Length: 336
Image (cartoon, rainbow, N blue to C red):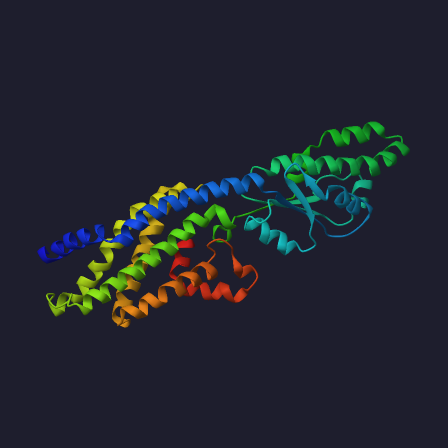
């Protein structure tokens, strides 16, 4: 036990003198703050996409879509036929929400039917749709009055028309047919989670640098004073100390970003990732014999991690094979 305590003290001092460790302590918070500021600027200029879709085409549906398509105060209404794409894009934050018109809109309005005419697709916890609902409801009101008023008046039933419409609001119109979906944090677009994701890559990079240091010191006789039966434990301690020392700063960096999961979940996520990195570092220290090998791998693997894992963008949406390959990348497990 005393031996292990001595190892911890020596390795803590060694880590504090490690230039790469000091650089990462400075880099992580600065990088997270920078990405956060960039994210806020991007959000200010970002136009939210709202999908509109019709399950069949008739006069009401076509006019409704034609009148809505375009820009409205930071919202861009876009026609999309593929309902699966609407669900996917709303889930991964590419689109704010989607409105799907049920079949036979002209016939529904002719019968004075309002409820269930539109399906609203939105993420759970999304508050902006309340604003968009009013824009959509306003346009649907125009279509309703245009097609139903002549019918009601022609039948001498103008009071019934007014009473029928007045009892409905945007809430009753839309919420009778509503589809709420759980957001997928693994696919959240670019800046909201990029700080969290880049921390995973940085910690993995740090682990590779520790492997390089270990191999270099091993060549200089690091393990000679350690008894053979204790060498496995020594390797665990050697990699555990610097990785755990980096953990508080990684946690601070994760909490700086706006889209964090709360201190407890972020801490558990980082500690589980620490365990994964320690296991991989110990395994690689047995497999890789030359320092030049790991140093040559570092830039290649870092670029691969950034490209394959959804650090800034999720390429798996365009190349499905990437969705499989990224499970071979340690940082991806921190991004889950």
